[in-house]
Picture 1 (tube, rainbow, N blue to C red):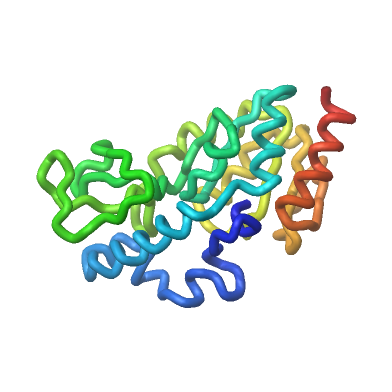
Picture 2 (picture 1 turned 90 degrees about the vertical axis):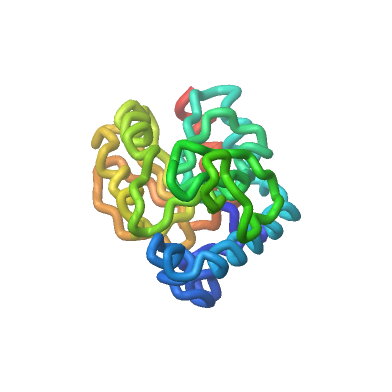
Length: 218
């Protein structure tokens, strides 16, 4: 969703996981092993995010709120949906612009685009860490995402490999009768009723989707 805003993806060719081992920068074991590397990695991501801007795809989703009840469940940790104007956003994998206690996952503070230094403390005295869900950790917002999915009248999946669980399992919770739009230049193989594939990047695909929704679902 944010690749066309210049935000590096994780799984694509040249993405972040190609340049950094997953175990080093995206797992709780990596944090225990070398937290300073983890802090530096996410400080870089936060600095890059500050200079990024929402793309037209983000703006289309925000604009659709004029006509529909739009709930965005995102695996992205950036704030581009918020900056585009969307109002109902669920960050499954956390948020770069926030930090939290190393011990208490509910003790979260806003830090904006500032770096987290080794020695920066949360209010409970523990080391501040990125408010990001890493491999090996629970996904606190998953129950809410499941509820939203079950209630959806239309489901749109944008720019995901459908390879990271439990998020990828949400697609199976949507009612089989509702329209499912899959927007991705290399769409993952999905077999289900009422599937509509738009094999384009997020911006171009959402431009096409916007026309479909406004012409057929108002």
